[in-house]
Image (cartoon, rainbow, N blue to C red; front, side, top):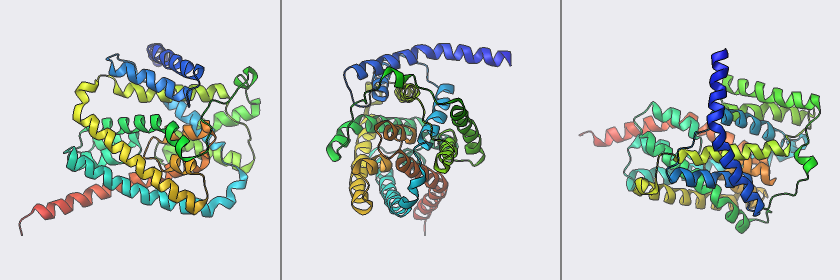
Length: 361
């Protein structure tokens, strides 16, 4: 036990400089009124340093804790008056699944025909979302893990950087940081509410693993916290300071994925990944307009719900900007669940189909 605690302290000490660098970038972004400052500030500075050859330790345990915190925050967005939205949500979920199938087809085609990747690599690199689950599944296949990781990391980076200008283009959304007083920054829930929020995080993470949810540390707490808030047992929210810290950790965790790489070494693979990300984003924008026309939800909410991947990042953006976080989160949960269930079946089917075509008659 003592050795384990000592190891955690050492790991935390090694991570501290990374978090301070990320927080510094976030503070600078906040000072210059950058949209989504706490997330993008940390992301930009750590990505820049990683591509410049600086090796920054990646947050592991802290990211896991932050995922549970984000899950609790997102669960608080579910309210008792959402029952009347089930019909509109159902229509939007269908649109999201159809657009996901289109994205999957486009991304796999690009990976196979343009990048020249194997079928396994193309399937897992083309999956629009679920990097953690995709990496585990790809590790048990013949996929090129470097190509899979690069494609997903570049996609999340492109999407997060593109969110501010795209949201400003399609919707009347304020992207400027909200004015928060010192008292609001330091506000904490009452002790009974705090215990319920902590319990939602701990029990939710355990439940997520038991139910084998995609990204259990995120979606397990969403379910428990959502149940508490929908039932009216809890109305408390996470303090703004913790929300800001969560954004810093998520921004850093995206940026350090590029450690050990340079723009020159990425070469053609980087170009293909960028093109793929931009095409998928265009599909998401088109689907968002259709979703808006059919359901009446804002194009901004539909866009964040339909964007291909980065469930923690995109849900956190929705929460930070107050853009229907419950709506956005539910869509990403369904997308990841369907994709994770179907990926092995789809890959097996395509391999059998290819085998039949290549075999002599």
